[in-house]
Length: 364
Image (cartoon, rainbow, N blue to C red):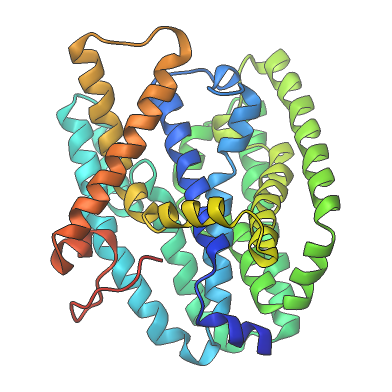
């Protein structure tokens, strides 16, 4: 516990480096999706690239759970109220702006879905809606957690996420309405709670984290085996159904997402702890501090990049369009974030970097 308290005040490079990698993956998968690249042909790497892209949300949730676990239970209420306040304003503004942008470009969703998207998040904002629920739930239950209840919380969250993937899997195989199920269930916190509470558990149980770090090699091997199992399921689904499930939401891919995210995060942590690759890690960390702002605005930028590309008539041949759009979206989104930050505290509200009293806080 002393280790947790000692580390609480410091900003660890590996966390921001992991955020940087995650936001690059988020923008990459959305560029592939918007350009209507089939999952088997995702750039780069086809399904292998797709498997990597789908580590992004688990990485963000692991880090969110870790940071929630670093806070003292006694001080949880005030800290999380402040955090929720900084999340809510940009969520409402950017979510509505993204929905309005798509509508103006002729991509408006069905009218019955608009209330769902305004409240529960449109496109990438479903994740923030779910994350805010997880932060609230953690605030409510934290005061009651001891070692035994923490273990039960981890087991229950893993059961909820497993059930979510299993139902989506079953609907895929039986021809049910898996899209509607995912749109509704993904906006409820139990669906992705395993990733968050694994991070929370490891933060509160440093001995478990240390044991996992000592077995990082075994974790890498387990991730490789999970990837092989996912490929077997992929071949089976292609043969039987002709396509992959939406967002790889089938039970066979859940171990890959959890183990893969843990492998990436713990590898970065080990490098940071050992003082290796400092130049690269610090460069990633500097970019990672802009990750939340990029997450908020990148879909608007992405749509505008593709729209400008189509209007101009300049479209790179083959799959080279994906890296061009991907890179342009990242750079322009970063420029938007830096531009808003430059305008001062009021504009920083749109990045979640201003407290209720108007004072700026460090990007987290």
